[in-house]
Length: 329
Ligand code: GTR
Image (cartoon, rainbow, N blue to C red):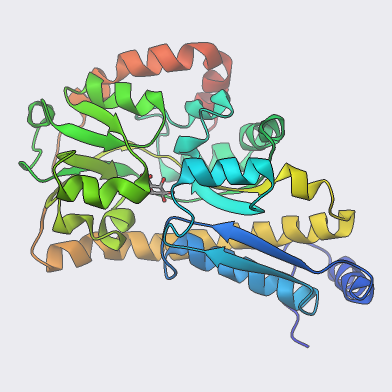
């Protein structure tokens, strides 16, 4: 039997745990974890969850597994979160962007130009603050399993290349379903419209919106360039991804199964971050190679300045949290 590693654990302890899980297998319930994602297989998040399923499967000799409902088969992220809260779906991987309306402290991570760098974001989400916020999800019926990378989000549209903040003026820009993002776009002169990711391609195609904002891998993977050909690296948001388990289902699991899921989650995060770094580098190149225009040289200062009122307004409630996050070196 191939045993995949428990990284960060003493070997003997890991071996005992795995042996225990295997021995307990006949008596324990089989568990097929259904997990949703808006992205297709082959995307860093879906591949990392698939890896997590392989680990669980291997550690329990097939008693536990993950079945992934990818490519928006179960709709958008808001709906997925609702299903997980109800216990109809065990797990989902979503953007922290849609978690703000459930646990508002997450909006600290949804503030424009909040994290200084990827390293800063990692230190915050992997440290005390990140754990504190994951724990708060319980009151929303969710068990937070970990944070994955999603790079920075930038604007794209089908009207004109954005070479300065003035170019955003009047453009209808799709945002994730969270009021903070509507105000963010409005503060920069555009019109923010909340639309589910599952309706985005059609909304761009039919002109319901002129553009949207996302990281290069989503822009590329979703083929949004076909319907919004100008991409500009404004990098106004660095919103991490999150994967959550249904508290309703979790509470019925044995402590050992919970522990196995936690361990596999840590390794899934590592895997996603590796895959992400590679994919992020490739995506813009792929888009450029197809002949689409990417504006990389843009003065961010006016964007940072214009969004200051949004940081003030939405950050006011968590001033302390924000101060602590800013102090993380
Ligand atoms: C992507 C993210 C998705 C989804 C999407 C969106 O970057 O991976 O989870 O939130 O953005 O804009 O809705």
